[in-house]
Image 1 (cartoon, rainbow, N blue to C red):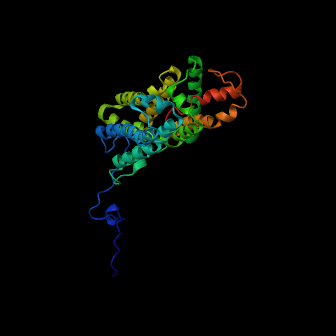
Image 2 (image 1 turned 90 degrees about the vertical axis):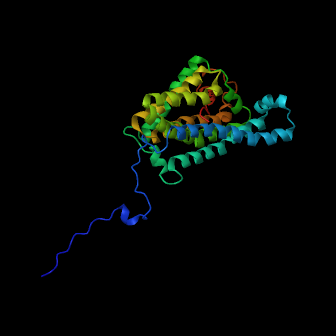
Image 3 (image 1 turned 45 degrees about the vertical axis):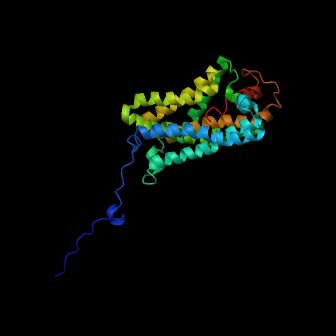
Length: 299
């Protein structure tokens, strides 16, 4: 009589994992392993790193040029090389901020980074719909700025200080700012706040902190302030409603990327419109030049 063959149980995680390895946890962006202190600490670190990196880049140049303390403010905002160094310094600041975010989110490599932040598409927010929404928001912002008059902002002076600074600003606005800001504001900070105090208050606080950092760059233009706050509000609400961060990143990327294209193309557009007025006129070439002034709003 043959012995019956007993069924073999399927292998589980425990069969392959080391004896001391913890079982994997479900990844839920709305229930992160970091707390409010972690989210707030990352935001403070992002601001501090920008200040420190700008000082590290700028101070040696100031010393070399022999700039006195009383001339420091004017020199750092009017000298083309000084302005360029301050803009370029944001690149390492952004990279270091991402490094700090990685440490907080992954607990030094123990958890997945992007999955923990909700780096997925959400229902109707596919790539093309997200990109279309970005274009729509940009057009709304253009209309508001047109009606408001679009006076020159402090950031306009930075971008117009030199061609090298304009290119650097365009690169920052496209390649690092959307990723860093989405990870900091709507990834780490929002996730911790909404679990602690609820989604409504989390949205309010994220918007307030975003405004605190960005509004001083555009203090002379209510239209630009409205546009960047409108964008931040929509992105935060999408994150709150869907629990996903990827659509927010794509909207932010396309919104900034279109403007950056006009920064890069503006010298060529000037051949067709050498004297661009403050408000966008009917001529499409002049309108493109006007749009370039809005660019760089998120770096």
